[in-house]
Image (cartoon, rainbow, N blue to C red; front, side, top):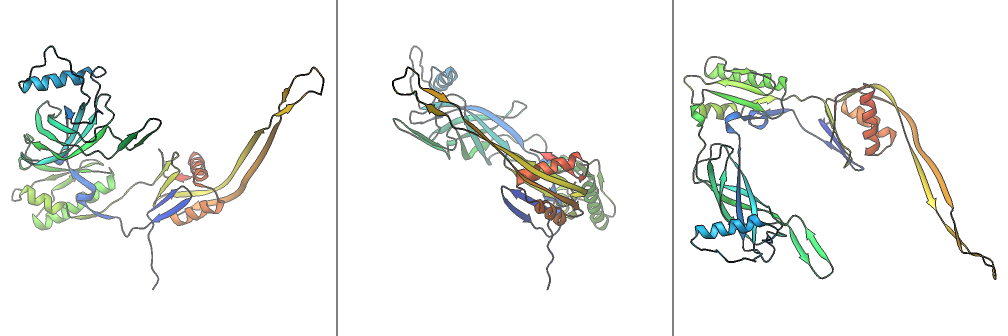
Length: 371
């Protein structure tokens, strides 16, 4: 039995080539869209990390660390007036976290901790109780716990070895939510679905799929596409909003994406979409390499002469030209386009230049994205 394979995207990286197979462009609504009221909220806070092994902030270079440590001890009933601290086991840090949607008080979330001063490492430290605020200035969580730092640093008298980042870490489940978000899910009168990849065709198909389901279940359409990113779903009178969302998010729709070619010139990576087409065009690619070699020679004076030793410059220039083949590209589908590019026999950096030239000639029927 002959098998058919679909190649929706092609990835070129370095000198290797992978074809990425997929069966169909069907996906659940929960995988391609998110609920507008179900977005994350960013939290931020300022705190101290203690317990470092001499790798914390130098208090002279980081005066805010000294002020924060004095204020913390003052709140604990310890006065430091007239005294001077020289400890290097404390570091000032910024603490960030994402508050998930519909989070309830008492649940825990992960927090990220990043050094703010001149500390060299946060490894082995413990984050002291830190309040996390939202954009409205309200405190929504409190973080505390031992840091996990993936990087490490080793230093000797004449050498230093560092791997990863030692001035940033993470506290898993380190924050406890103290305040819930003011909005309630069931207070909404409708559902707003936001597409992760905005597309008019996909938005219309989502609305059609939801309306087909609602007509069978509730006796009429309830969804309307607002634009390429949002689909509005009105709540039927007899429906429960939570159950309605659970039923809608598992509906399967056929997705659509515009034709794109993504090029990363720094890494030499090329990603070609399945719908990319190239009009009939002739391409010639050749590289000119110029090699300049300097071989200076020392010239000595004759014996018993009053001459001086001199340096005689000698330069060799060699030019080499490779390639120069002319190939006709006509890519009605992805396989034909790839075969035409491979027939020229160039490396990914050359293919990047060819794609840019084809786009400039107006023969590339796709969007060219340069990263």
